[in-house]
Length: 400
Ligand SMILES: *Cc1c(COP(=O)(O)O)cnc(C)c1O
Image (tube, rainbow, N blue to C red; front, top):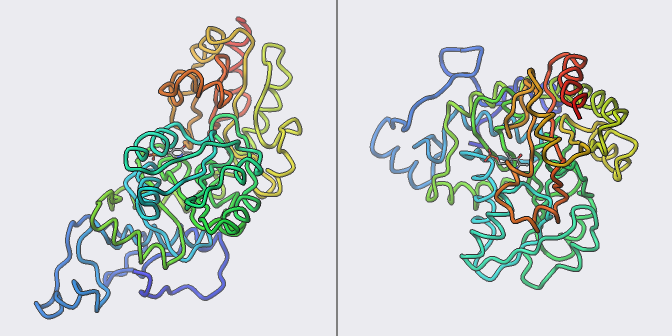
């Protein structure tokens, strides 16, 4: 619904777009965005219906491929990412599947970081291989490996930065240049930073994919996803494919994400500050071998992360405790505030053991290649009091 106009003056800034961008209010003048929980839309007469189905007149027809609440979320997220358009999807994985299905065919090749989300590795390296798409997995941090992996059939480069759970950062501008030179497209999974900290399109990425389940919702309520891209791709490829493939975002979930976007910037700021404070504190604990957070001076890509992520490290950190898996389980089980769940991006802090949860389906070799050692614990910091969270972790650490 890109041609339906916005009431906002041209050039308004990101904080304003976050709370106000979207379709105009309905005839009733509602202030909070309406939730259009309807599967289909009614046409005034058969002639108009025929025109709409023939794409000669823009209108909502059926919520599998267009709904005013979903469209409002899409417009708002596109505005925040600085892309022309966006399409909502049923989940983050649906966003990645839609991207692959829209852009690739049998015989095509993808270059992907080996540090991306576990299900992304399974999808690109496993499921899509059955359809004749080949994927090379390369270093998260060394652009030369991406360049060396290119083939004449390479159509897509896929990156996620910072990575989960080690917060390794890849250089988006460098990868965008490699993609451009190769005639391929670069897609970036911006789940961890969100557009509040990092805007991959401004650094040259062609597509930005999201799990709306994480920080965009921000309170752990819904599963949702989105792809932000140029209008030509969204309207020319993604919407027609969505019409046939149907991994659509529910209007209710879109509405929850839409309201989450309004507080995204202040949540990312506050949760990021807490995460950095806890990361610094963990670095000083003798039972902790290593801490990973892009805001730490000790982070291998600290300078790149600060330049690429608006000077912030984000709210996810991980750390290795001495004593392997038993020690990691001990720290996790001693917490009484943190929630033991592999989800992240919530106002409630979550703690997890990546090796046996999010990365548990990988082979041992894939896990070690991704740096997921047995003593690794991941923390996705929420909005609780920092000292309470430190006390919560100190309880388990003290027993080691
Ligand atoms: C969770 C996650 C996904 C998948 O999103 P779902 O909404 O759970 O399908 C993709 N990428 C990253 C980085 C994630 O954290």
